[in-house]
Image (cartoon, rainbow, N blue to C red; front, side, top):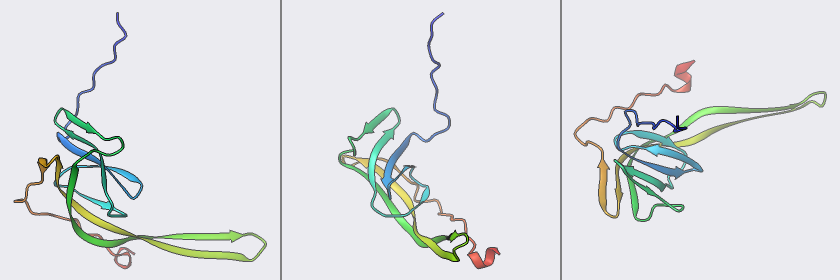
Length: 135
């Protein structure tokens, strides 16, 4: 009996995707989907197309991930409340993060488009309730 690990097969994942870095976070992006990010500066670190994988050291050379900005909005309010007991010191601050929603149009390497979204389908974005409507 040999000690071989079973080989995991991919399960219903699209064949082309990219891992990008934006705002200090890494995202796995696919053409035709939209994502919410904090900043717009994006760099590609890994691109997979079928069985071909491009891994950057730290970035993939001549890789392009093109997208369309759908809208800018502000996230939910985060309340920070600091209190020191027996000192009558209380501080209350709120913060709302600026967020950009964008749609991935295509992923390309060296000028060759590996994957692009279907431009014939209609983009459907789920509406988000404003905070005053939710309460």
